[in-house]
Length: 269
Length: 252
Ligand SMILES: [Zn+2]
Image (cartoon, rainbow over all chains, first blue to last red; front, side, top):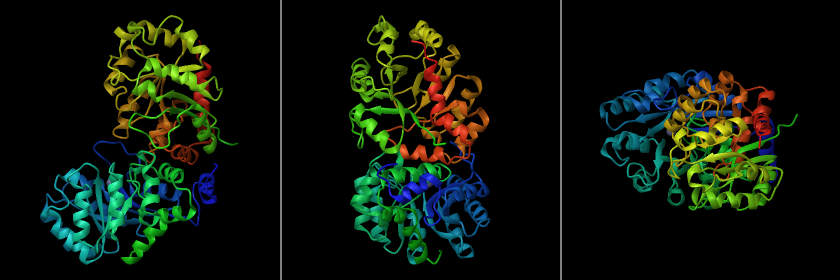
């Protein structure tokens, strides 16, 4: 492996490097309507995490995303491995009564929950819709994370919508899941414009180029590692990052330093 | 034992929409392969897809220039139009180091069946020439593939550029029914555990390593294969052994 840092060479050789953990800031769990996933349970997920030295996975269960009132599925799985698994509380704007109930019960799970997850393109209401307002205010007041599924050329969760919520909720740490996939330049602009907005890597390695752009134009401190686990396997995605990012310092920022800092800020390290 | 890699899915040239740091020539591709320690590759030229199979096939031969680490893959069109398949086709394949053939029926506007390719596909079966079917946009559809294999169950098919949606639900029935169907590993290495399950269910002999370069990172499928939860012997088979065996059986 020419042109690779010693750290990258060691990851290639051993598959995991003790002093370079990985924090996965975007994952899921459970089975799925459109894809067969052999890795469905928390037990299997944790086994995969260990093989790649992934020390933290923050996820939302497919059941919380694809049906009404499913956040208990995430909590149940996460509680099996409290040190390793944390949860985003899914907010579906089509069921405000569920959102109200979940936010009211948030503190009961405060050692597991780290913030909220929005999947607007699937739930068919833009992230600026009133149906999300309570959740945004909640997350902003408590300075929590908001993992937002983002995609380019999209009026539910595209760059324009992120621009609006980033301005409105400056204390909320907004992770652009998939980094406005396709509209990479706009994602970079947002990460540079707002202190509270981060680029997240799930589905970004679909193509070569965007990660290199992020490093050059936004810097590695604004990039978070994520996999959509179990959609994308750890070693494939870690390999893609090693293919795109040459400097060891950048690799460490992306794999764990940025995530640890953010988790520390919300008292969840 | 160091794992040796044979990439079953890479192309030279760039898409007309552009691709980040693609390899404009065979020499550039070889340089990139050296950088990540990939020894051999089955390659086609993007012009075969985007521009014209007829011209792209020629461009491939020209840039490969007989290099022994590269194995060419030409793109087919219906034999009746004589654009690609003409007299001495197999002799020409041999002369130009072409070991496999691919086709993109949706993008190139033809049907993938016995009416179009009947006698020709019978010849491919006899000569054990692999047909590479890309599932990328413009390539084959699952319906096309299923009916093709019903008609030609002994055709050696390598499925590449698999999409993540539904992949096992589409491929497992084919692997179960047709023993000459092979999957390229690039996308299979994506779902956590899918790759291992495929090997466990159907055996390592049904997979060939591929990267999807220049669109995808070679390092991604390499790191995945190196640290997947299968035996070292199986890793070597998938990394290069299966592909080498397939190509060694080709009769030109
Ligand atoms: Zn996701």
